[in-house]
Image (tube, rainbow, N blue to C red; front, side, top):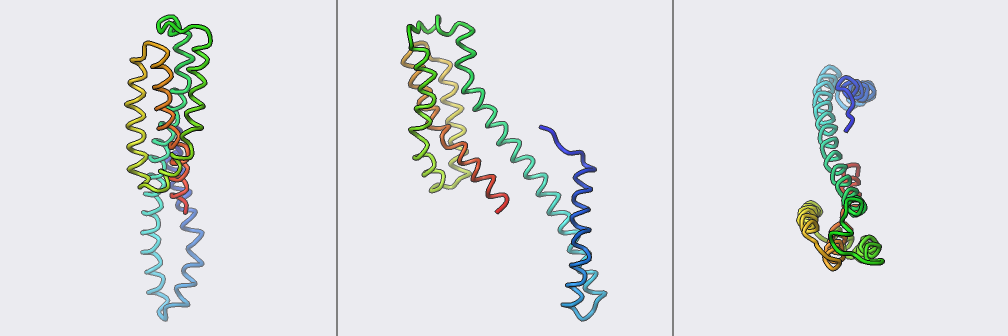
Length: 181
């Protein structure tokens, strides 16, 4: 994940605080009868704002890193079946005719089937606990996917993966929206 150099982040924070300095000082002078006291309170307020902004940038960069990593793992999950077919999975699992096509197609059927129930649960349950449990269960089912040795396993396991993956995209969108509202 590419990050801005600390000097660029520092410059952005300093610019933001400096752009607010004069309007806040004038407002404080109007509110307080003692302009020197108002200016000292403004300087203390700047220090607090600087700390909160720097912590906010650090927190969002960590959160977005985790969200991006989870999206990347889901992308790999969707592509794994294609990679495995190139490495001999079709012969190892004794797939015949259009069975491989069905194993790939069930990925999208499962996602469509579970989209509405997953979105309902995402809104109704505590989002942090629900998405945390969903990601952990998704990882456990994904590990079970490696143990599939026939067509039935290759169809059923991805169906459960879809049930769990369907809540990730809307849930992560809600988390992203919560940072800015």
